[in-house]
Image 1 (cartoon, rainbow, N blue to C red):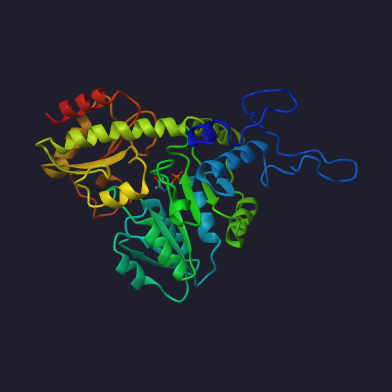
Image 2: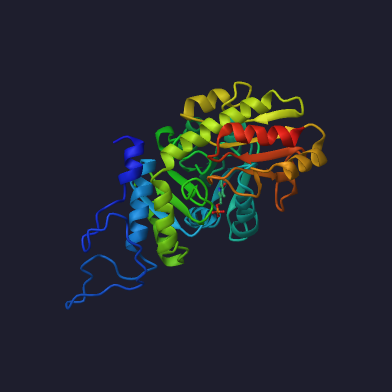
Amino acid sequence: MRIETLAVHAGHAIDAATGAVATPIHLSTTFERDAEGGYPHGYVYGRSANPTRHALEEGLAALEGGEDAAAFGSGLAASSAVLQALAPGDHVIAPTDVYHGMTKLLREVFVRWGLDVSFVDMTKLDEIKQAVQPRTKLFWVETPSNPLLKITDIVRVAEVAHAAGAVCVCDNTWAPIVQRPFDLGADLVVHATTKYFGGHSDVTGGVVIARTKTDFFERVREIQTTGGAVPSPFDCWLILRGMRSLPWRIRAHSENAFKVATWLADHQRVEAVHYPGLDSHAGHEIAARQMSAFSGMLSFEVRGGREAALSVAAKTEIFIRATSLGGVESLIEHRASIKGEDPRTPQGLLRLSIGLEHPDDLIEDLAEALE
Ligand SMILES: *Cc1c(COP(=O)(O)O)cnc(C)c1O
């Protein structure tokens, strides 16, 4: 099946009891045992497994091309479970520009619990190789990166990881469908399903997907069911509903973003545009190899720095000033003024999450704001 068909049908079954076509939301926290004490339907208790969550996990695994998936209450809960599957003294290699919540999680939580972390520029293979230590157990890849849309070569990093006997995890939140990390050597894929999978800015969620059911993934599953950072049945249902249209949405997000990026690149008040779909982007060649489209995220730098950028964001009428990404509505954000953001983020930088409006309306809105 092609990806569009899989998105519509994966994790989907007609409800045996009622014939319902839409997936039911099962709120029950407990499931009846039979007279012999067994569990005839396989479900015991809401934290350990739930039918709506199970449908979501099947769907997400199928769509990413993995064997199994574990859904969580947020993207960072999913990332935490991966880190919790390591042991004290283990060493992690992560990108310097990894999602800022992940930097905080590593530095403020997991280093205290005994993990050792090196932050490296993942676009430089030599730097990655030099960072490898005898206890390096995990490589964390996130591409395109935030907010400069740097591109990491997943194939190369996965090779280094495997040569070191480590697991390669790819946070694929920014490029679902259009980037297939399992085909490129990743062992685990993480998504903040809060973003493109949910797709409507109305649900928080995360997932860890395993290419194959390894012992490492079994530990992630154990942490999910024992730690309990699970999504509610309603949240699972929302993410599953969003997933059904994701291949078509991401295509439209990508087309719109390409048009906006191309237009911005020619604007005299714009100093730089960061979009991997542009030939001028430093990572374009690798991106063109490992992505089938370039997704809906981009950033650009306004001439005049912080004040100029803030005034552009203040003037847009269709773009909404808000953080996050991947929803139907376009968002604009001055990243440097976000708490916890990397101080290296340029002051004149605005990040755009391109939604599903007509691209000409988005361009006209930016044209007026940049006037
Ligand atoms: C948003 C995001 C996360 C975290 O997801 P939450 O649902 O907010 O916890 C992780 N990685 C990337 C790349 C993200 O954009």
